[in-house]
Length: 125
Image 1: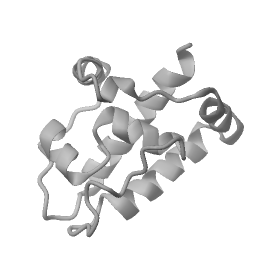
Image 2: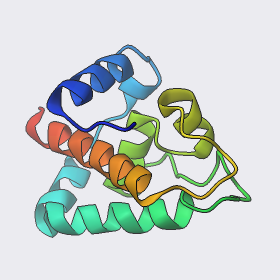
Image 3: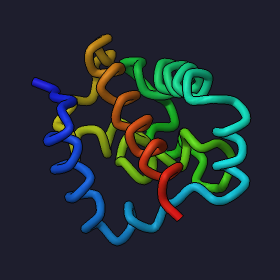
Image 4: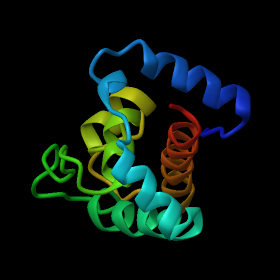
């Protein structure tokens, strides 16, 4: 169903890189400093909390608008960069159906994608 191997991430991130919109998102210096100061474990906890609150429910009143696009939190930027920002994008990019609660496996996958993006950004210039 949902894979998380390095090869699968490579394929996914290659696809995302070819989207002009998705490829336009990057962590700025301030966000990288935030990640460094908080540590990846806490950022991962933030990602789980945000995904569980904003994407997991069956019904999301403001779907498509629940993820800020401004430089608010590294997870939000990662969500836009990885098309994990709303249920519409989750369906379009990952074929995760709308109108049902996300499973634990799906939440884990989404968080892993977000964290892989953040790890990549932390090592880029």
